[in-house]
Length: 71
Image 1: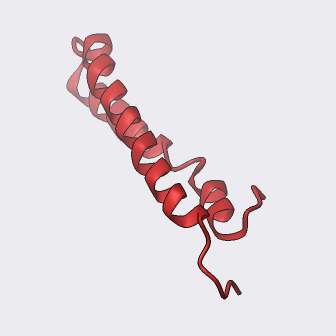
Image 2: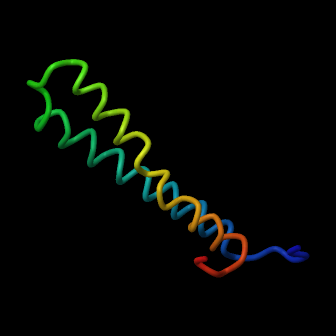
């Protein structure tokens, strides 16, 4: 168990916020132009997948923030 504060947690949170902001802006900027004419249900499915895909690397990132290791 960690006894002292570490620089990885605030840096990791700021990095996560920055990465999610960039990801959201890119999706909001380019996805409507690519899938805007598709059926509504297909668009909904794609936006749900895009809304969840950022979770894939999150576990390793949180492990790094807590331990300093990527695995």
